[in-house]
Amino acid sequence: MESVHKTVLLQETIDGLNLKNNSVVVDATFGGGGHSLEILLRNPNTKVIAIDQDSTVWERVKEKFKGLENRISFTNKNFRDIDKLENIDPVRSRPLEHESATITLGRPASNGIDGIIFDLGLSSDQLENSGRGFSFMKDEPLLMQMKSSAKENPSPEDVTALDVVNTWSEKSLADIIYGYGEEKFSRRIAKGIVETRQKKKIETTTELVEIISQAVPAAYRRARLHFATRTFQAIRIAVNDELGSLEQGLSKGFDALKIGGRIATISFHSLEDRIVKRFYKKKVTEGKGKLVNKKIILADNSEIKNNPRARSAKLRIIEKI
Image 1: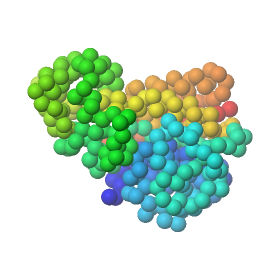
Image 2: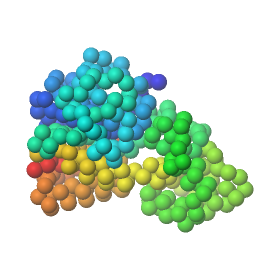
Image 3: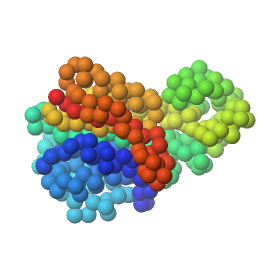
């Protein structure tokens, strides 16, 4: 299936990385491949290590990379495992042969990674095409895992949205919906979920949306932001441990950077941005990093008009010193 994803803050992100000739860049959230493709087209001698926990993303976009295969490699991992890409120097890595090709970051800091991109949140492809229950606008099974393999080959450790809404306590549900979704009606929604599942197992996104609809006031249902947005966001974050992954990915990624290398992070909600801001500040305080942009970079009106998702995007860049 062809990608429908529109890359957010594309030029600003790549400009901010300040790449030189023969750079090695890690695209830690490959998605629709927009950042990776632009980097390769702009910089003829640069190599890209692409990472994504969704193994299907390469198949959607590989036609865009015809003729560039010798400068990009893809590995199917969560970016929290960025330190587990072992034993192959990316500068000498073989051309991509299949979607599970393995790369490495195992190089000394003096000869390390020049740039890392974290483009957080959901891609349009995951919302529109995954069939995993990310969108409250579609009737899909309650899965919500970022990694595609969990749908076809679930393992015992895979937590799904189905598990969350049907087995977690009312208090736990209220806590995550409030804490991860910043939803002011979290207690009412959690109570509605528990009351419903006592009668019947909750299995689809449509069923969950109806529960949320019944739990919140009528005026809230008519608000500009869809009334299910924050609850769906919260459950997705919990299922994928997105905030824990971000903290680990930033820390391990920074360690892999060479001196002068940069991390560009695009976040889409306050919880992510808070983690990024706090991590960057810590590195500056330790004397290990400097902020490239002291103020967050936002999309301009033209980009927002063409891609409304860009409205909430915040770009922060740090350089290792």
